[in-house]
Amino acid sequence: MNHDVLYLNLGGIEFYVFKDLLNSISIEHILEKKTSDWKYVILKRRIISFANIFRIISEYCIKSRCYTRLYFYELRYEPIDVIIDVLDKKTFIIVSTNIPLSKVLKRIVSNPRFSESIIFITPIEKGLGKEIYDRMDDIKTLSKLYRELFPILFTKRLGKLVGIHVRKTSEGKHDIKLCVTKEDVSVEFQHKGLKMKIVGINRCI
Image (cartoon, rainbow, N blue to C red; front, side, top):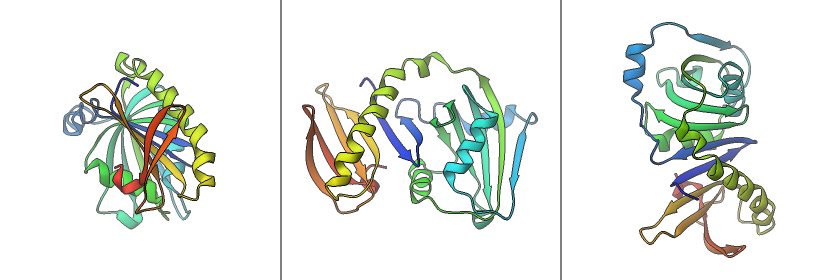
């Protein structure tokens, strides 16, 4: 692992947040430049989750960087603006948000259901930048580690594994947290020589 990164897996949808990429692009700057070329999807009178929404986004924006605005009837005065890199239909890198990232991630993790939604999407860049391809090894490693650890943690009855937080220390080592749905958990854990700590999801984001 070469970067500080937070990985979330929600219903098979994978989200990555790289510390050095976060807020590297200003949403305000993008809005000043982009005044047209919007695609929009209106979802009325149906129950929809964040997983459904990101699957829909991937249909209009794949292997590209896009700006999206999400409106929900239940949160109609609090739209969510997010810049994301879409690697494929199930893999997203969050680059910037208009509200604190922790708030966005907690909403995604809680997986609320919405009755009506509007999704606005506009491309920023076609294709993925070099900084994304430089992170592919980390992306593959985290996805593989999650698949290995999910059944192990499930049998320990410590809650469902939903994320992994990796931080490089000043000594060049890795501080790894396994993020589970059960709160008030703090357990040391070792897997294939890697020392990790199992904690509640709110202590990861």
